[in-house]
Image (cartoon, rainbow, N blue to C red):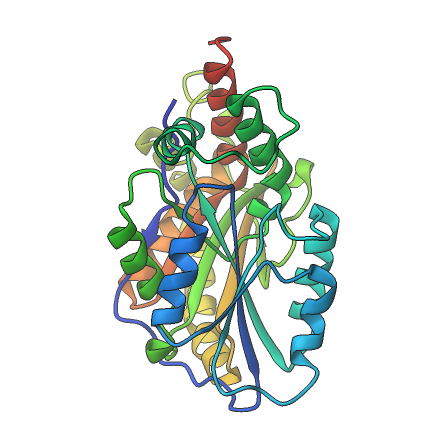
Length: 317
């Protein structure tokens, strides 16, 4: 089953001032073969200082002194000497807590079948050599990196992208020549699975009319027009949406003035399938129409699609 790529909607980037005394770093990671090396080269062409496979324990030392005058692109994957998922999550948390650092996590995603095809073309050995087969190596790495994927500020699915397309996508999101932009990510999630880490703003949608109790809508999700119509029929919905929209359109320019490069907005409901998805979709389209650069992440839908893809790969579907 082919996974739908993360929705990215772009209008004219909003103006942003990046503080002169702030370090800027982009952490680049993803499964082997997804295009990390291409992304690092693209960032180098954009003026970033490329650093690849530095031990995680040494990364904080890069920022002990004054800013070097250019942003840093740091490539990280399972081949890093002291790589661990817990260590990378700790590093992300440490960097984002430090006011003198503007850090973003770029995750390059790719479907397993395409990763296998790319490895077959290059005849390279997968870095997870302990796996009995290439298929199991790819699946093992994707599973290992799943918690990192969930933390991504920018997620790019490279499955159908050529190297040229990937470079263009990197430039669209991370060109320091257009750092007068604020990247806005809108997330839907289930409260039962916990609140996503890294959200700057969060809105609870559980008071809205729940499509789960309509058997005709239960298996659908908030991207379906009939589900959206059901939620929008709630008398509270128009006021909730309008007030939330007005609040965000008021706050985002203030985040720009503060020098932020990324704002994460979350909408939660019970299952993360209907109301939160519908609100995230509608709000993302509204913010994009207002000129903001917006991406959408549906955490629970992505988990479902990932699980279905693994079942198909294993012949269980």
